[in-house]
Length: 310
Image (tube, rainbow, N blue to C red; front, side):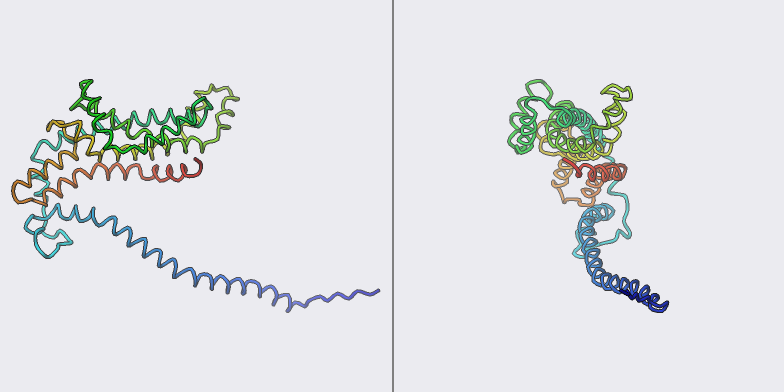
């Protein structure tokens, strides 16, 4: 039996070899032609949404540099040509701004520190240990988070007033910490659960104790999660208004949000000077913007890593 084998010539081999890349290039070209308009549309949409988010901040800063007469004009001024820092000078002449700034920083830093401390310990306990009542504890954290803050004002006021902490930084810091801890526990739990316990066990095999293995191996890996949780706690404590309004009735103990409200009310007794109001609002927002710019890299990586496993 004779088997015939057809051997392609050099030209046929070249044609076959060149046909595959040409077909691949054509397919890739058609795909890029379909994807490019969609990508352009999504880019334009993302730019429009970003502009909508940024514009109020820009308008606040732009208005803070303009006079009240310019702001009350029917023709809007989108660029602060001819503006000045007179509004900021008038606001800073009132020494109560620096008093309110110190109180806000004290309350916020205390609340963030203890919130991260308690939430970190609770998240480690939930993720690393199996104990009786663990599910009930997790459920209690969720239920506490669902309670409306307005329904707790009377109880919080009576509790803080009964221990003599009304109009004090410590009293407000305790309430802020208790309000932010539940969500922070739930948030940090995802970060801790996303780090394999095998890393600690391997370190313990090498001679480290459980505490040493956790602090040297696991804790550094939790840094992005701690930063992301700290940013959330910082924003909640810095911008909080209603609890501070109830627990800090004394004018000399006002935080920056309360100071801003008092500033607007003081301006309302005459023609409202919106330039000074916007300057005061900008001064309140500047610390948050600076803090966010410092930690945004860590916060982004922390949010992404925390979303991997819960």
